[in-house]
Length: 228
Image (cartoon, rainbow, N blue to C red):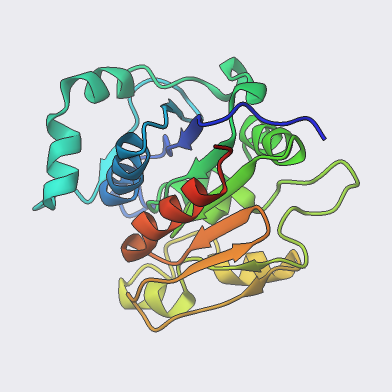
């Protein structure tokens, strides 16, 4: 097995900025980007950003940011880099030991059918790397197939934003599908915690988390698997 380059993470952000036909804004959920980034930064792990359309991605969850998210927003170097996120086709998968799909409702529209992102996840995984996602981020895993044709999530335990949580935020009829249902159709075994409680599930080199409260835990689990 070819080993991925140690200690480099590719962080994936949505480019989609509207919740269906509602006109309501959405994007990458701030805490699900900022908190993992803080975990990797503290550990000295370089992070690069990619999004389906490249350039500056939209953000959601900007109201009353917690201190970690505030520091992320105030970091001029980070904000400059976010202004020029890579396109999937510009990424060399061989440079990364892990790919991390951040959530936010926007992911439900542009992650699943992005062939470039799916190829990156497949390549990183098959080179011995880690694939991770949190909250709605697992939407990016739905159509990732391995070289043998099987879905990456088939037969694996996963966690993702639950149907109950989706109903609680009033968007079950707005999103194009219910994430847990689609993961299970592809053979994943979903493990849910009570609404809004942290839940991190590790299934080999696939690591997933249920909601924003799980973002730090997913990043820590990824860090534990990175080559040292």
